[in-house]
Length: 411
Image 1 (cartoon, rainbow, N blue to C red):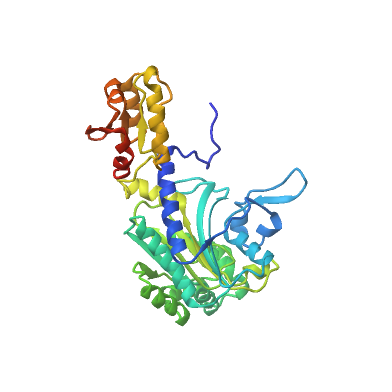
Image 2 (tube, rainbow, N blue to C red):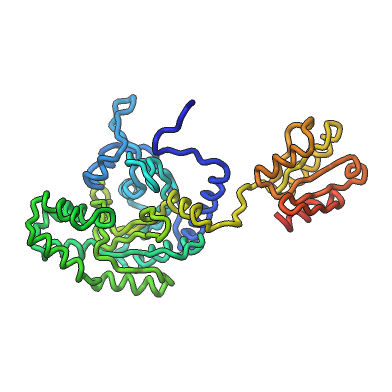
């Protein structure tokens, strides 16, 4: 039997209903803050992708040579492609606020919450160093998750600048900062002893390691981060927590960093981002500051499904199935379906007029279609339609010309 590749998934209609609801919701929140949609290609030249994320991330990239001999790769995230766009189109109005909802690809070791094709819902502000831009990113995350019925989540926030300063205060050279921080970033996945052993393997002394952990334990937000947090609170963000051990694994972050975790299920972060003020210039563009985040569609949908956050979500876009009572009454069913679609309703017509009515009703139930229309000989003769709500069994028989208005009030 043919199989999907490991780490890649099919999404059946019920799953797509959840995904589409999440996309519609977060897109609405993005637009409410003035973000406009941008899309970038699935493939980028390898030199666009390499050297931006760090060695750990580059191990997970899908890089290959195409039939034209070009070195290319599937995009690893949506931030580097945005930076490339800003380098290619320097005349875009600033600040430039964009969102993008597209798949990215990572050769992960697959496990719960980790897939090789994931969809990111990114939103970024380019061209300003204002702490309000950072605070607004936090507000968008909070608003989006709240709109999706999340309540038990924490928005963790830290600053790369704070972390860089702590590394220096611990007596560690600035040249080792990134590799040290990559190890500290594993504290939520490994024990302190395992992290200390990895730091020792990177030639840090016991005194440096001990000093670094003491500094992390006593760290406090600096003035820049405090200003961001205060502005976020004024924008309605209530789930914010300073976490000095938060690192974010990618090399391009320069200032505030943030991610969102949920208590249940233990699935990792459902959002992550931060300030990256030098990435655009690294791609040959102008030296533009930028800040942004992503909402991970796949993990958000996993949380929604596991915690049943949207129990009343309609799993089909079809509001009505028009049945066919018998082949000789097919014309009446066709005419009804046509009239209802013209009125703006999503209507499915059962395609086989020889199928028994009870089987057609079971088909509608299996697809979670809420209503069926029945046009038997009595209804056709009286120019009427019987509408049945499958969940309750309630039926209404009414004149055919009143059906569109009746259904518009219901579906």
